Length: 340
Length: 144
Image (cartoon, rainbow over all chains, first blue to last red; front, side):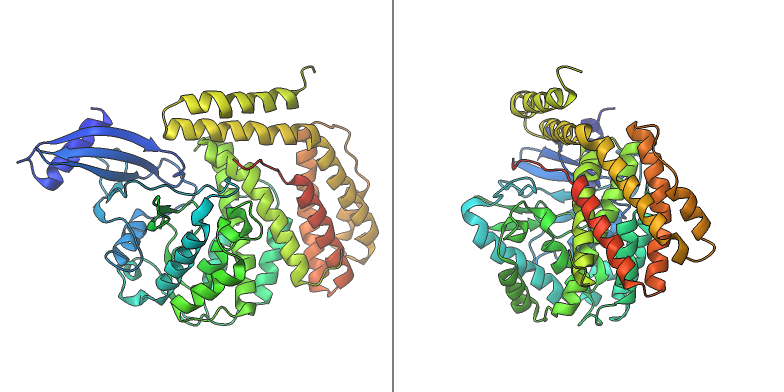
């Protein structure tokens, strides 16, 4: 049975068989290296076409994540000021598509920015940047404990969030490095020896909030924040620092190809009601590039081992990994007062 | 080897990214074709410099170990002296990579020992070296 027939069977079960389900179009979306993502246009009975997104667990993944976490994260922001697609079905069984998956509504008529684009948002750069950092502030402002996500992830104390995240990504490097990483190890020692102040609050952390992981329409309106597979509860400065990492755009003046760093931080502060303490943000900035490095180390290992030969995995190892190694070395030198 | 591998890979990038990729229907296939083309561009950069970058790093680590072996803990000093006396006789990238990994494991120990012993001068010297190596290993891409 091909994938179209399997999807029809699954949707018929979910929606009932009184109105037959038919597939109008099905295609795989490029770029979702952490999950296989399919765009499916369906029709139910004589009704209008409807767009769905199927996110299937891969055989191997860039990031070892739980689909329940991503699904719960989408549910956490349903019908809120944080735009997300409606999460419809979570399927843990393997009888339908061989691997577990979940289904969301498709946000139509939108595009995502590319980290390789020199100017990913063109005339909408400012408008998108204001929304982007405003939405991030609103994620931080939400009550994490009341969210569905809280049932699926550890809840760290305010002074333990940094330690939990640092240990998690150090372990990834321990397990996946194909060659010694002296820069990463020096950074880990430095971060551990110089911890940040406690988080002002523990909040939902998207975990991968950046250019490429949101959809905007032709008017420059952000319609959906995507890719919540690394969502957790922690220090909201983690997301802010990650969003400002220079890897997300070749535009060095405007992180992510959007707003100057200072403006982005000011908008985040206004919308979150929190303060981006410079010392704390410096710690999370260094951590952000370390976390990036850990992800690229994992992807390089997957490609090298042949467990995932998607070209995105090789790209991560060849381009992103050296980028973050250089960034980490420079940030470490700055933090330790190393003279050129 | 003529045409040079660098030229071949750059031309293959252009062929796939500018002609073959756009001819495919939008979606996974087209995106993968473009990313694959970009990989060729990156490998082209690495091809020409790969051996030189690794050889320079290995030489620098051996020189460092020769300088600092005597002030390192007794458990580490003989290994450092031995490593400092080594040389790269096989200049293939795979052989240089293997030597590089061995030397970097030692560098990790030296760096940790420098930090633990409060040797700020050595700590900074190692960070400057690593900064330089990281810069040499960067890959540059055109905006697309």
